[in-house]
Every structure is written in structure tokens, then in C-alpha cells.
Length: 154
Image 1 (cartoon, rainbow, N blue to C red):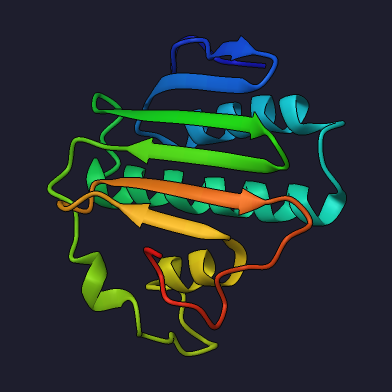
Image 2 (cartoon, rainbow, N blue to C red):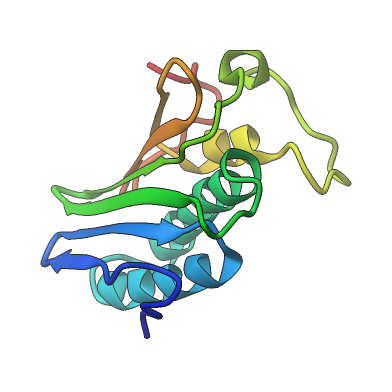
């Protein structure tokens, strides 16, 4: 399913997907299809939902905010599975954002933007940003608790 016009074919190992993709919604969809196939028999449906939600949120943020939806710019994404967890790392060439100021914000239920950190908090087990805020590392413990109620970057 990978569209070589929108992304380099992901390198696939049994426990890893690694791709440098165009900053476009089409590339996100193609990569998420590959991700679903890779994940297919590895996790429960609850963990599959959480994994894809976290991956999509990180990729959409990288496309929209880090690359201004410019498909000439590239996003790096690595997903690893094993030892009862899924690890997701996404980096973009943008200037980043002040993630620390977002940690305690709670978006309104009607909000259509500004929900990323809340999604990470509700579904991820562990979360790290680089200092600039243009790279994110997400850990989801399979069948495990989320960050809800705990401090981020622990």
C-alpha cells in the first residue's frame, strides 16, 4: 500500500517500521495502513486503537505545525514493538513548540485543535519531547495504564 511518491518505503523488520515521509496527509494515510498491517496480530483492539491514535496525532502535528503541510519537507518516524510495548518516535524540521506550557492545559470538549498533549496524556504510558519541541517519543505499555493523573516527562 505504500505510495513511493509520498514517502520512502518503510524499512520493515519484525519489530520495527522506520520511514522518512513527505509532510502530507496522503503520506500519513499510507504509513498508517502499513502500521495497521504490521500491528495486526501483535496487540488487542484497545491497544491497536491507542497506538494508532498516538501515531496519527504525532504525525498530523508534524505535518501541520512542523512542516506547514509542505510535502517537500520530510518527517522521520520510527515505530518499534516488543517487550509488551509500542514505541513511537516522530521528528520534523520545524522550529518546535513550547510543550512545557501545554502540559497542564485541558482543552474544552468542543475544541477542534489544541488537544494533542491531552491525547498523549490520556493514552500514552510515557512521553518525552526534545528541548525544541520538534521531536516526540511516545511509549505505550500494552494492556497498561495511561499517563492520566501522572506528570508528563517522568
